[in-house]
Length: 175
Image (cartoon, rainbow, N blue to C red; front, side, top):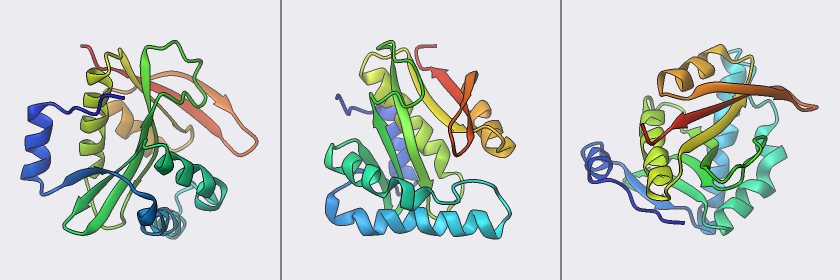
């Protein structure tokens, strides 16, 4: 996968003192802790999101890192966010026109980092000649769905697993 970012995105990250890196397996424990802490934060704030996400997806997160599809944002030596960009469609029927954003987590206490994650992810989709960046999320989390909508991710469908109902969203990166 081409991992080239636009000059504009690189400059925004520099101005924000954020470093983008591919994650390495030796960082797994620190990354996994981001999910555990975010899950606790959701519970404390009565947000029905990820009640057992970290434990259900532990092996998946590790495999994503091993496959060089997991990115981290760092401020200094501190990992402040993580996310997967891959051609793994998840709940989508893949048509070859998209990259997929999965496993987004931001360290508790950091705000507006999602904007940078979306910017980087859209750049990666563009640099790989894709039409769309796609993601799925919990359907009943209105705040999260609103955030995605504000960042250009249009609702394109929904579905259900044994654990939750989800929304499918995509952003046309060629517009």
